[in-house]
Length: 514
Image (cartoon, rainbow, N blue to C red; front, side, top):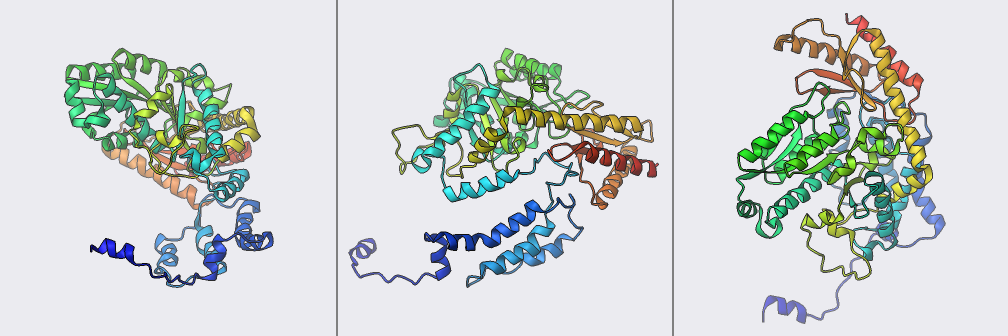
């Protein structure tokens, strides 16, 4: 008799361990008053964060090694009272985080979560629905589909066959977009990469390799995705940019021609709508025309620029977007949501089926198709519920006015810095709701030594500003090596007086540095 058979033949009654009371209470249904009591500590900390005046956008300058000391204990053998754990959260976690609710937080492209986003997060976790399959989400499937439909109608208003899926964020969206477009490029060339593998598929097409084209100012996740797709750095052509960080069409055309001459398959042209550095928007129509002329597909990374879809005043910056094959957008950047809700939209929903997913044999659904067939995820939370709530509550008009407000702040900030004469702006006029700037250079030439000195001056300016703990801005290192400071206007709570105070502080520091 085999060991496995002996196990199955053993009919001895099992001995059940005694579960700790805390573990039982955590999973069993309890009366409402007991549930409220268990929530009390969590609610208190949440209220402390939400109702208190926004604090400094810059946390206290406590060295990382000192913060880390509170997190060095080994895994406890026995459970601890939740009250003690929450006390540690209050003492060791909350004081050291950045407060992105601050109206003087101008550092990154992070909209602080609205209070309704925080509350919907509680509901999302209580519902515990997994939108990957209809059987594990039921109505949650249609919440997700409705939000995707709303967003798709903004990006592809004239394409009823358009579709999309949600992701964890822009990085995953960019990777999945390039994955399915790589597969589609090979399919059009006569090879099924999901069946043959990349090496054999390329061989069948008669090409020596394939190329993806993206500007030097593209998000690093694009460069990483090309590596992760097995094409390596050799499979990426970094197209030069113009004086405003926009892809240069002449250089793109030359690169596409050269790729063909070398026997390479020009697979995908990546265009950016709202670069992470300065908010640059590539010439979408011209870039797409050149891509199509040379047989390449088009992906637009609009993780930042997708906020323009809500604005009647500024939507024209995305002219031509509807011609893209795939579009990355980040609802959590735009809608005031907590992180973990990115999106990938496609002009033809059939593209999503090229992902290569294998159906789950333990979920069988006959009523509706499962969203899990078109996403890299195996399971995830129903984060789209937060977007569903907020889009209905604020409407397109509300978000459109928000975008216009943020753009007005950026324009006014630019005007103030220009008027001071202390700064060199990049670009001279911002495209979107952010601006890069540096102290006006002292030297006319830009030798490596002079560049290092100028960068040091700007680094010192940034340090002095942050030491005040009144404002938070970030920096941007351009492909030229220049170091710029960067102000991002993304918080709906930021008012003209907050922007003006930042400009005044920078101008004063710049004059002191002369």
